[in-house]
Every structure is written in structure tokens, then in C-alpha cells.
Image (cartoon, rainbow, N blue to C red; front, side, top):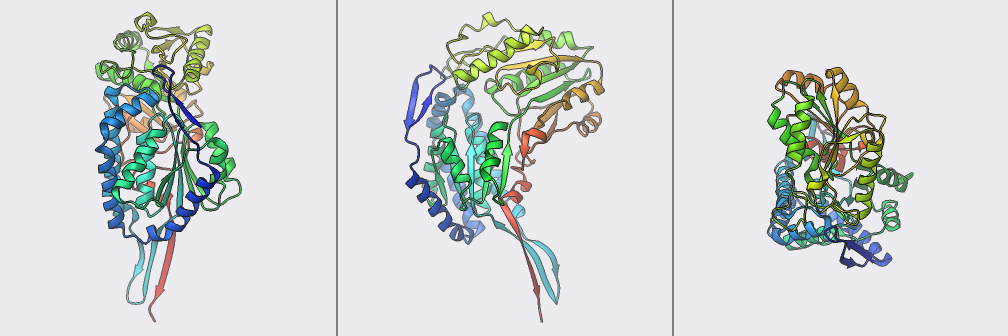
Length: 459
């Protein structure tokens, strides 16, 4: 049985049977048989059905928001934001599907009609995470279906009801049941499905170790994978920044979703001339948070996802403090924090260095390291001194500087005066151990299709 423990009170929230071997086999068979039918469904009809899918999903927002809060602990006052993100991303992909999937014409004259079609891959196996269970899955589900692929979705065992809500919306929209299916799976069954010849592509969001397991399961098969594997995202605060705006946004970027975001801020490098003022302002802003039951509408900082995560976060912070770091946040202001629960007080550490695990390994919790730098060269070197590269940001009033500086930073997305945000018109990708592949933008469709060239000569 799949068991989901709610981080709100560590009680058993729900139990769902894992898919049996016969259910898995039937799901793979149905998807394989539906590929040709869905591929030959016109793009206009696919768009129509997927728009209904999005509309049906959003119409159930109140139930979805409460389930989301109970499953992974996000404050219910913030859950509607994920649904808005779902809608924005889905709408972009629906509106831009023709442009992304249009054929590429090489030659068209009296003798030749040469072009490239973008054919669907077949069946896409999507493995979605718990931290943004709808925003991450919509990035994969909608373009996969629009491109003419069938989808099998496996959601995290922490958020299985998210998969159920998406399936319900798909059924209500009229998308054929064999085209969009879900499975609740444990690790061994997941690996077995990836290695099955009826799976044509894998999309995974999760840990680096999880990404390596995906690659192992693919083995010698000639299929691709899109892997988004997290980050240790840095920010550089220049002396010419809009100070109030910078502090407010970097506090939010560090602690939103209890810091459980692959593109959340985990490292901040501040120009030495404003360092002391920045630290004091950051402390003041952070201590305004209300850490409490996420179902309370006044709460803006909820528990982390599970006890083991809370323990890992606390241990990493404590290790850094034992190595000389200092926590500037007064933990006594957060009464809900206890070693026996998932409520972790926000922390911000100074006197940190890259000799510490805290500044090098992903924490995925409500904590951040703040370091003083002399100049942009120091900031550049420290920002690039990481195994990850999802997003990075600079906080400055000089746009020309920002563009030039961004060119030196090893990252998939570079922000100026913004962080922890996703524009569906931009490619979401990363470098180094952050993974491989692209979602969103019109480029995201290319990884879900294969090129097929037509060379037609008129004789």
C-alpha cells in the first residue's frame, strides 16, 4: 500500500494500493495501442480537448487546494498560486502549439516539395515530484499530449491525489482514457516500466540520485530522458540595487514553499559595502513569518514535507554552525518548531564558506547562506563554484551589467531583480548536475517529437 503521511501532524492521511503487475501491463498495452489513433487526431481537436482538461481541473480548485496543503504542507493561502501557474503554462503551450509543431520547409518549387514533420515519440512516462506537483507535471503533460503522444503519469507517493485530480479532469474533458493514464508505483515497478519497450521517453523531476536511477533503468535502450534534478541557486546583490525590493524578494525566494523549490534561493552573495545593512534587513523581514498549521489562512510558512526532511535540514544547519557559521534569525519567535515535528524555523547563516557542505549541497528547506563579496569577480567565482546550475540572479539597477554578468554564470536561467519564477515562454533547463533536456517555450516541444523528413520530387 502507498501511505501518505501529512506533515501537518504526522498522521496517516491516505492509503492507496500500488498498481498490480496486471494493471501495469494493461496500462502499457492500452497506451501502446492508442498511439496511432492519438497521433492521427488533428492538432485542433487535441487543443480543444486539452483546453477542456485545463478548464475542468481548475473548476475543482477548492478541493485541490486543501488536498495539496494536507499532502505536502504548503500554506493553503498560497495554494491558489500553483493553480494560476498551471493555467498560465497550459494556456501558453496550447496557444503556441501550431508554431512549435509546424513543419520546417526546406524547398518548395516546381520540382521539389521537401519538408520536415515533427512526429510524436509515442508514449511518454512522466514522473512528477511533490513540491510543485501541478506546476511541474503540467510542464510535461500538456506539451506531450499536444504533440500527439500518449502519457502515463506517476506522481510522488507524497502527493498521489494530484495524479487522481488530473485523471479526473482528463476524463471529464473527453481525452481518451488510453491516452492519459496514471499509475501509483513503488521504485522497482517504476524502473521496470522505464525499461519496457513500449515507453518512448521519460520525463523526471527530482533528485540527482533519482536521475541517475532513471538513466540506469533506461540502460541500453535508445530513448531520451528529460531530467530536472534540482539546484543550489545563487544571488548576487550589488551596491546599486533597489535595496528594499531586493531584500523583500530574496527573503521570499529563500522561504516560499518552506524553501522546497528547485529554483529557490540557497546562496546570497552581497557587496561588502551594503552587507551589514542587508543582513539586518533580511533578519527583520524573515522574523515576520508565521510558522504554523498551513490550513490556517494567516500562516505563510508551513511544515516541510516529512520528518526525515526536517531532520536533514536541521542537521545541515547545525553542522554549519558547529563549523563557525552564525544564524542571524531568532528561532524563539517560531513556537511551532520542534524536533518531533516537521515545522522547521527559517534560518539565515552568515560566516559561511564554500568549505561547508551547507553552501555546496542542496538543502531544500527554509534556510539560506549569506556571504560578503568584494566585487563582481568574487561573486562570479562563487556563483559558478557549484555542481548545480538551474537559475541564478543579480540584483542591480544596471541592465547592461546584468546581461554581461549573466553571460559568465553557468546556469539555465538568469534573472535580473527577480528569482524563483518561471516564464512559460522561456526554456526551463539547467547545466551540470541540474540535469538535461528542456521543458516549456516552443523549444520544449522538440524533445517530445522526432524529426521525419519528406523529400518529394515531382516527375
